[in-house]
Amino acid sequence: MVQALPKNATLCDVRSTLPHPETFIRRVLGMMVEAKKLNGEVVVRLGIIGTGQAPNYRLEDGSERPFMAIDGATHRPCPDGEAFDTSENWSSNVMTEDEVKNLIGEIRPFKART
Image (cartoon, rainbow, N blue to C red):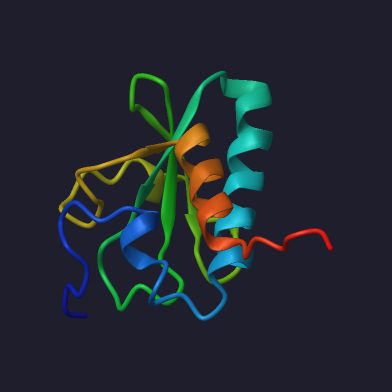
């Protein structure tokens, strides 16, 4: 498969390629929140192979040590070994939980009270 995403891609970069950006990013955030309960601070790193419509992503601890890879199409964990793959298949950038929350806030349409 041809690399279609930039080497430094984050969720900000793929939100326009996601069929349902708010739903996808909310599910990523949900996985981060659950992982935080067991692992402390968590960051997310995207897989950069593919078109960006359902990118795999990897959860890492605050020191950017990977502990879980997630299938972007199902939001289920990939086989254990995939999380520790240090190949060029993963973005060089990560996003924190707060950055992901802020991105969801940017995506959601603001509705003024009447």
